[in-house]
Amino acid sequence: MLSLIVPVYNEQESLGELHAQISNACAGLNEPWELVLVDDGSTDGSWNTIVSLSRQHPEVSGMRFRRNFGKSAALSAGFEATRGDIVVTLDADLQDNPAEIPRFVQKLREGYDLVNGWKVRRLDPWHKTKPSKVFNWMVSSLTGLSLHDHNCGFKCFRRDVACELSLYGERHRFIPVLAQSRGFRVTELDVHHRARAHGHSKYGFRRFHRGFLDLLTVKFQTAYGSRPMHLFGGLALFAFVLGLLSLAGVTLRGVVTGGPIHRLDLILALLGSGLLLLAALLFPLGLIAELLVSHTAHRPADCSISERTPPAETSAS
Image (cartoon, rainbow, N blue to C red; front, top):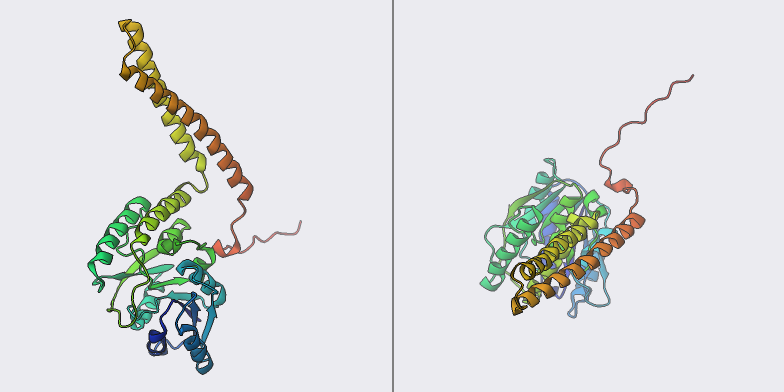
């Protein structure tokens, strides 16, 4: 089964046309499909439209949040509600073209676990496209996963990926990065992006600084989540060596010259003492983080095991 998840926030005017386009796209796949519409606290008539669609079309279901919890929460709830082996996510504003769905499924079946959309010709104002290019460059540089459009809402992935994703806050921007960190094969596919026909964008300038902070969090979790001492211990060692060199330089200068203490000597002495104190704080912090990881670590869940060999046959003695 193919499961489609669409987060909805004040998109009443688009939902009917969206369902019609999805139906046309999925008709050519010759396989069962379902559409889950997650109302993320809409204040217009989106929920009434979702209820109407679910009554008219058995493949449509919906759920409603009490308030706006964000796209990550909506996607996470959709993962729990769907049953398909292949999951497709797209936005409700009709800028994603559902006619691309068969191409996503075909690309996925070439041996990939996640196919990320790439809006080659993005029909959005400059104040969204220019910062987005900078953001994508930063994500690709820091994480090592080179994609043109990490935050594209149009994605297709296997159930195993959804099983292992932990989405909260605004981590939906980093689904490809999180999937790759778990060993899944990620690629991208160019998609047709359309101009917004109804409503307006729900994202403002605040998303950029929050996205940067989330990027640092994801980088730490994917690179050092299972070995935090490598980060904290490395920083502690660097601060310790630099602090010792600063204090040694001040001491050596005083011994050699025997002159009065200058302002630069005081600055270096304070800097060296501060670095030694920082090292003394970072090292035990790394040990505590390692203890937490060791106590919470567990055997990988069955959904993270891609293949198994048959059990060995034992011969009777």
